Length: 357
Image (cartoon, rainbow, N blue to C red; front, side, top):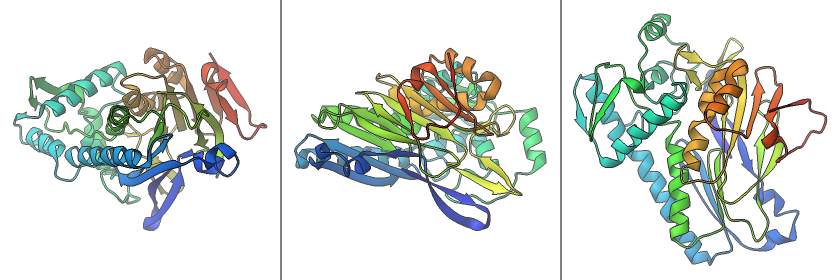
């Protein structure tokens, strides 16, 4: 599963972030000779795919097509910089006006406000203006730093989702710099909806991948769905993991959306308080147990734990109820919680891996 990044000179490079191994394993195990129905698309700025096992092909394709239509609708309705219901909210706030939104949008805003509060606002979807300052509200990234004065102004008066007021379905804010960006939330919503849609259609065994956020349903003809976690700096797979029914996994990495300038990497993972990309972590992966919001949690919660850094990530994970976490710091050192370590199969057995409680 690959995400598009732009490096200096406008060169586009495709990097594997969290790779499904089912196609590889099909070359190695006889069980994979059984049919797997696959549907792919490009939504949310990334590759998405749905793999369905042990279902009639016509039913599987119809269910997968319905899921992809749902993805397209979410992407169009909540796009952060192309005209959408989301930009309508941002335009109203910038103009000092209130706006009545759909019931769905109001539910999303209430949800992200709650999640932001839980994360101590390390996850904050009200920082769309900051994301735009860094050039990440674009399909192509220019290797250029934002105006230092604009960043200094942000630090002095940061905008936050906490400054957005929701009364029923009416949205307003006294801070015109508040701007919604659901980039760290919408893929999780899509995962949960896809799982519900497939189950309603009678699909019990599938895996859904949205650019590295993955959820498993059932199994693959009696064997677990297996994924590989990509090393953030080396080609190939760092570790493999067998996903259980209903589990979701999400990764935040500085190699997913970034640019490089003068030998320094600037990723889309912005610290809302500092107003700049977090520099202390290469990648952070979470494994989320089954639940109706497992997809949302896998998408959202990797961000605040990533941003918390070396001194704060473990406490942040505990506060958020996360027991299965893998972190790779800026120097490539690997830390993993004991609960996740026992589930992972590291490809390179010589790696120095620190297990933490």
